[in-house]
Image (cartoon, rainbow, N blue to C red; front, top):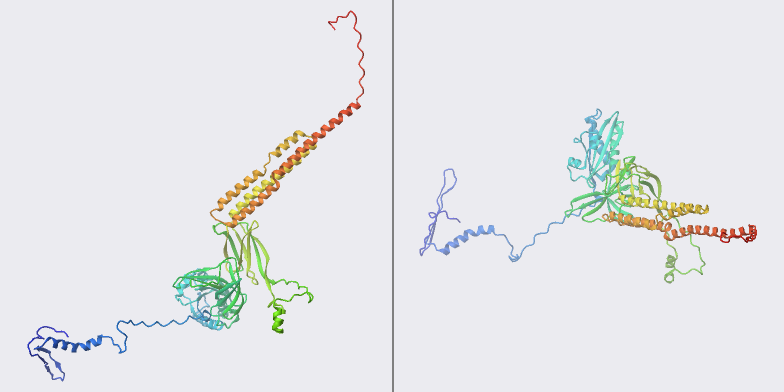
Length: 627
């Protein structure tokens, strides 16, 4: 209760309290009451009475502000727990989720494509999609007004973000952008598939139609060729995988659009998430394919063909393994080979072998020879089974037979190709066996081995390990081996010449040729060159830390060292020289023996010398001094 001023309320404290309230009210002529001012006069009023008066009038107001509590409430100090929010409903399994699809058709300004014809085509296409896919698709068909130009050129310019911006619908899973344009006397139909899960925009497919009445059916066939189903890779073990397909529990009315048909191919896709389950990265797994072997509605089993050591099927909150269908649309594909650390450098003159993987019956082991019953030993547990009964013994005695025919994979070489000066090869598509294996080698060294399906793209690039260091190693060692072969051949030629000179007894030429033989490089010289080459290559390989290349270098250097020790060992050269020197000694000994034999023979053949005449006696008168 609020007191306006002192004139309205006067407070006195005599012995006797008196409360006088006067209210004046007058009734006007119109029959309405009009209240006058209230006057409160408080006299002989004590303080306890004032408090009582305030409590009486303030109780209803406080009762409205105070929260209502029951008699059986808990103490004021106890805190009440907030109610638990309702649990969200469980997510719908992907096999029960239909594809949310939008088909956008753009029409060119062709005389035959009038407004009425366009609307008829859209209506008929809606019926065709519903009749073909049924509950698998939740589709809508509309006319495209944002594609410019409205032909194959404008369709080729599209990008994935541009289509997503134009669609402006985050709930869509797939969209098909189609265009109908005139092409002479025909109508040209082109289309591309936009996929939100893999963030891909497929390559352009096209068809031609001459009769306008077949336009709707040809557009449906184009959509069927563009549609690529999505599967989740659940597990992978020993080259086999189990998958689940989107909307798999809604089988289509047309068997030609079956998602998990036997022989269909899929390419793996990795989706990365953050802690809030928002997609951060979508990565296609190259050189890897899934081949569908069998299926049961939404589940299927497939074989995995990959050239990478990448684990698939290990799904978690941050990573999921998906796969999208593969639709070849070209007759061939150009593959450009480059090293992974230098994509601008082409690999020229590399050999590319094409193999096809076929399944052939496994060879059966020859039947074992039967032994007499007396020689056969009882199988383990046969005695215990015999004690249990005849049925158990029969189970032990019967050998386990395979469930069906066993097959093994066999690779057959189909073609050999050599990369051109731009490092490219062209691989053609075989519709019956689209999957092939490419073996890339250089100088007998296998650089890469990976599967490939031609026709998915017009051109692609394969990045292989950098083989430049290995080529340098092989080239230097080949030069060393060439010099080694030349030295061995020269030594053999000099040996022949030395022997010829010895045979002709041309000893000056013999001595000169033997000196030239001694001047030829020996094993120590070649071993020094080999060690220097190996040390230089190891220094170049140190930044890369390639263990396989180091093993290759050790292998090649070891082979070269074996050649040096085989043909230029010190013992072998020493034996060869001793053999040549022995020729000279043998010739000298033969000459000496011949000389000794010729001297006695000459003596026997020569006549006896005549006796010398007797000297004349000196005269008596001769002077002895002059004599």
